[in-house]
Image (cartoon, rainbow, N blue to C red; front, side, top):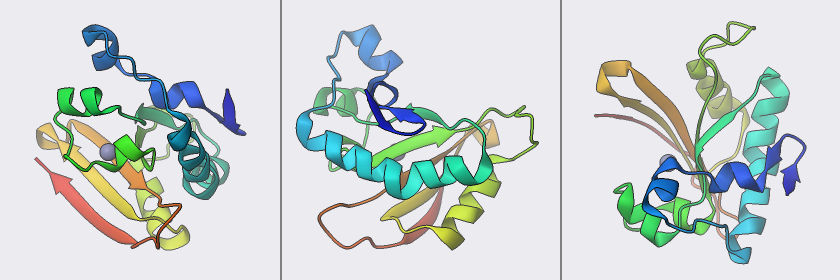
Length: 145
Ligand SMILES: [Zn+2]
């Protein structure tokens, strides 16, 4: 099911961990509308501005999946309010993921925007969340482990 011009609900359900462990990670109805808003307010504007595919690496997480990936106990991924994403490193336009991050800081409303770096920079992604029901905090930080 398409939830915005360039994003489908399936992209937010897909998880290798869920598949491997036999966890049913279908998005419940309460989270569908929130993910739709996350697309409308954040992900689709990024997609529109840069014009390259956005690859969702973790969208919705049911509680079992969140436990399996050692997510925060109150993770916004379980509420349908958050997504992790990256872009192809060798994209045709030479755009860097950090360019997206900087543009988002200056141009979008969100609850939390996190620049995620792991393994000495070998793995990088952006975590972003958006709240439907409450005020968005516009928090920006970096998480390196
Ligand atoms: Zn995340």
